[in-house]
Each structure stands twice: as structure tokens, then as C-alpha cells.
Image (cartoon, rainbow, N blue to C red):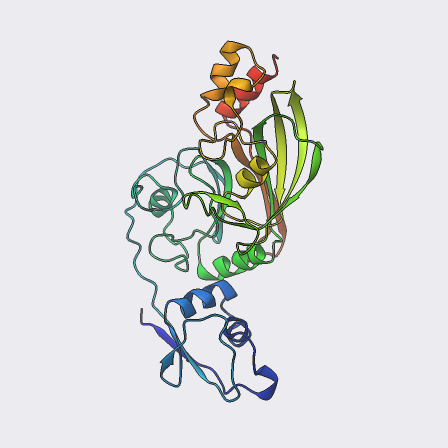
Length: 321
């Protein structure tokens, strides 16, 4: 398949000083703004033989842009016969219940055994918008987080779902088991999330920069003063959002090796149970439900998944306090 070259009409007086990404999103209605931003940043947009790589470039009167959409590349990851827990599937989407320990797409140090490798074996068609390393991937959850995510089987579906994520209309509910008991029991946590200025491998609440983030939480069950089961509903979907927001309130996820701040020795638990909790092998976080509008039928669909065995066991042991 060859690359596609699109030439926009000359910008009018009403369009002067618009951001380039917003301007092109209006002109190229078959592409999402996120796609257009990637094309701009990748050097695929030109004006008067000059490559424009700044999404915030201000459109001038008479500007005409040449947008080159590269042909989809063959996916580099190899198909692998890995069992998948498929909650729902049709010609456009697949909803997968991902196990903890599985990386969503290939990255440094994880080129095999990913969800993408499994999808390439299972599906004949996946959207190419995510690039060669991320075919079909509209969103992701952390390697050690279990639960639901939706996969796009074609580019039209990918764009449709991406717009819902961009507009924050996707419904996502997570269950987290945290140290301590939140106060108040129910609430909303806001704060921009960006790279930690002290550790570039971590995300953090930042006073300037970063991206706005909001998490609504509800405490479902408390276990003395030691721990709680918390339901989180995301208004936004930033990297490590739940982990950062809850730990900022002093309630890091049990098993989280990155964001635990409290001293584990101070947890008021019997010795045997304390050892089990402190050595829980992954962050106790599960993407429990997922709701979105189907790209073809335009009907709202809602999916739910049971807690995995390890988190169910953790709750059972905590309930004996």
C-alpha cells in the first residue's frame, strides 16, 4: 500500500491563528486529533516546502499544508500462540481480560509474550494506527495491572474509540486494595501528573506542567485500620494515575514497588498476615469494568470482569482481621 498525500485548501481569514493540530483536525475529518499530532511531530506536515513539527504552530492567511500519511507498516512483533481471555469479540473490536504480568505491547526488555503477540496470532486484522509495535492498541494498562481493555480491529474503529478516550466519555472502573483507610471514605482527587523531578522512572503530582488528572474514588470495604478496597473511576487516563493519586493521599496500593511511601513495619496486622501483604507480588489493581459506544452499532456496551484469584485471596485474608 502506498502513502497518501493530502493537500489542504488555503486558510481563510476566519482560520488565521488557529493551532495547526486543531486546524487539520477540522480539515481531515477521517483522522483523530491525536493521529494528526503524531503526524506533525513525526515531520509529515509541510507548508511552503517547510516541515512543521510544532502542533501549536499558528495558521496564517493563505497557508496550505501538505500532509503525508505513511502507509501502514507490517507489524514487527511475531504472532505467538498465547491463550487470551476474550470477554467479547466481533468484526470491529475485541474486549480482553488481561492477566497481571502481561505487557500490552512490545517495548524495551519485553519483545515477546505481550498482548500484541497474542493478538497477532488470534486476529487476522488489527488497526495500523498504533504503529508497527502497537497494532490494534487503543489504550493500555500497566503490566502488573489485570483487567479489561478494548482492541480495535480496523482503523475506523480505532479512530472512533480514540475520540471517546480523548473526550473522556469511556467509562472505566478499577478496584484497588490500598494500605490504610482513605479519609474521607469517598471523594475526588485532582492534580496534574507529570514525570517526577526526582526520579524520571516515576510519575508524580506536579505544580507546573504535566497533564490534568481526576480520579473519583469510593471505599467499598475496610479492614481495620490496615487496608481498604477502593473503587476508582477515571475521568482522565494518565500514566499511573490511580497509583499516583492514591499514594499522594498516603494510601499506596498493596504490592506497588514504586509508589509505596509508608513504612510497612507500621502496618497494624498479625505477623503472618503482614508478611503476606507486604510480599504481595504485584500492585493490587484490577480494571474491573469498561463501557463505551460501539463504533458500528453506536450502542453503549458495558463489560465487567471478576477479580483475579490473587486479589480475591488478598481480600479474603484481610477480611479475617
